[in-house]
Image (tube, rainbow, N blue to C red; front, side, top):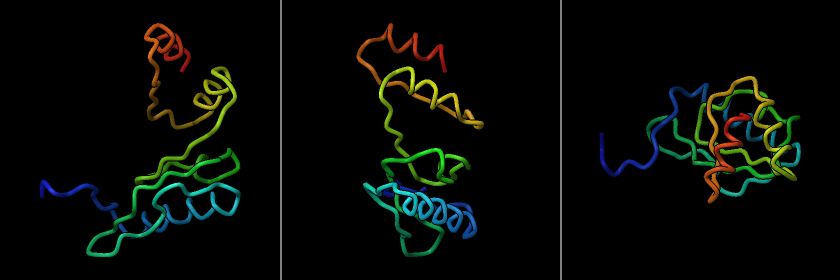
Amino acid sequence: MDSKTTIGPLVRESQRQALIRQVEDAKLKGAKILAGGNIIEGDGYFYEPTIIFNVSREMDILREELFGPVAPIIVVENEAEAIQEVNNSEFGLGASIWTGNFERGLNLAREI
């Protein structure tokens, strides 16, 4: 409830360890950490907001659900490949499209 809070803790230590394992697996398989990727010391199960680039389907980070502040980035060549990647997830928890062209965004959203 503290208004100065910018990020909350994970639910338990085992969840933080699972997140660490997923990030490490991605690094070992060629992903690059652009930001974060570390435990935040202190009371609670905190983990830095993390951005991971060059992620692929062979990595646990895309084959398992993430329950922490980690954003994996997949590079694609075109819209068709992007739609294929988005629809390739068994989770389907959420998606967003960022574009200045409303009609284009609406058409892409219909394919997800």
